[in-house]
Amino acid sequence: MRAVNPRLRRSGLTLIELLFAVTLAVLLLALAVPSFGNILNRNRMLVQSNNLLLSLMTARSTAVLHREMVHVCRLDQDKSPACDDNYEAYRNWSHGWMIFMDLDRDNEFSEGDELVYQFAGSEQITMVFNQRGRLRFFPNGGSRSAGFTLCDSARQDYRHIYIFHSGRTRIKQTASPHMRSKCDAATDLE
Image (cartoon, rainbow, N blue to C red; front, side, top):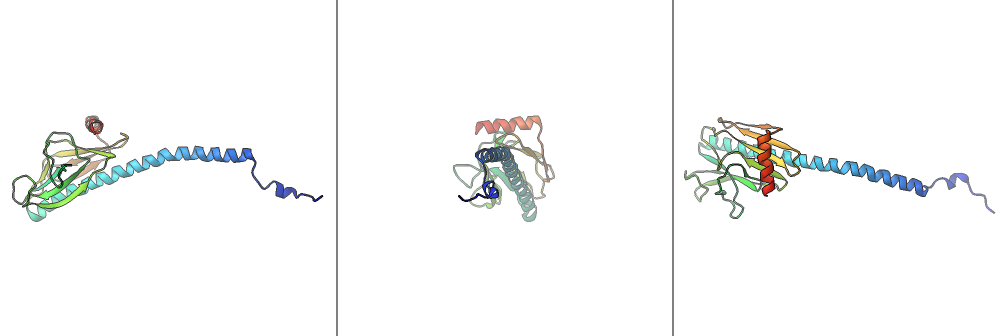
């Protein structure tokens, strides 16, 4: 009979060791997946808030550069590109928005106007405009004071974008409880 080398015998894993390793891997994965989901939600919020900030800055600079009235409005889902005619305050702009130069000065997007840009929205991020109607930038770059509150579908992350009378914008990482409630209510309506 042949002698078995004791070192070769101990090189494998026992069933108990294998079960322990699999259990440990599952526990680590269970801890990592929610964190990865939070990272994705924060990234979506960052992208959408930067898109809105960029569009507001683009609208203001276009108004100054061309010395024309520039509108930023919520997209009408049925006929695009067109502004939504519903002018309620605290409307959800999550489906997208557009920027246009009102060359014929009729306060509507029509054939004589120039579409500057159209942004797609995000289903995971709710964007609530705190004023009625649309936002206008005047040829001097000014606008009315207004703001947007953004919240994610999990209601963990909120941002607020301020528009000052000068047309300048500022982003804040938090929102007031009042604006949070408006954003949450708009999320529930969708």
